[in-house]
Length: 232
Image (cartoon, rainbow, N blue to C red; front, side, top):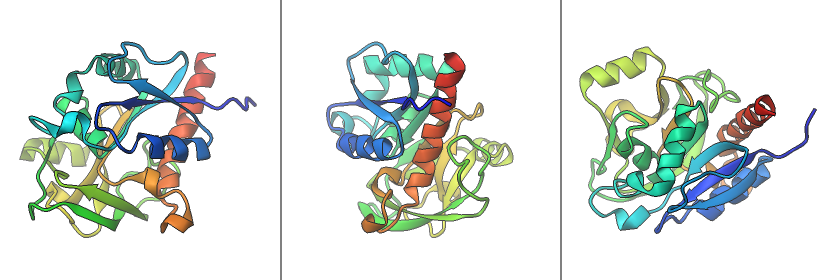
C-alpha cells in the first residue's frame, strides 16, 4: 500500500485568513497541503482534493465570495470538480462555492444581524458522502463557527429536493444564524463538492475543545488518497 501523502490544494485569496490553519490541520490528517494563489490558472500536479478556506476574500465586497468566485484559480477548481475532483469549502469557501454555482443556495446575513463566534453542535444528516464517511448517522459534532453571513437559504423547491436526495449533510442542533432548515453544510448532486459554515480545521485536537473536525478532514484525505492511487 502506498504511503504517499495526497496533495490537497488550498486556494488563497486576498483576505483569506484560515488558510494556514487549514494547511496545518490537513497535514496532521496525513495530507500534503499546497497553497494556490488566486491568480494561478492551474492546480498542482496530482492534486487529490481542493479546499477553499475561511476568511474575507476580497474584503467581502459586493457579496461574500462573489469576487472570489470569478478569480482565475476558480476556473481550475471548476474544471477539477467537473472531472469528479473533491472540493471542500469552509465558511467563506462555502460562500464562494455558492456564488460560483458549484453548490446550491446562497449565504445571507445572520438572522440576528450580528457576527456569531462560538462552538456549536452540528448533526450528521448523511454519513454516506465521501466527506462524512468517518461519521455515524445522527452523530453530533462540536465545531466552531465564526461568521456574519452564514444563514444558508434556497427556494422551497430546491430545499425539498436537496433533502430528498440527501444533499443536506449537516444541520445545526440549535439554529445559530437563521439558516433555512438549520442547514450547516450541503453537497452537490454528484457528491464531490461540499460546503459548510463551521470550521473543522479549528477542531482537530482535544486541546482546542474538540477533535470532531478531524473526522471530516480525515475523510477528505482518505478520498484524496484513493483518487491519486486510482489515477496512478
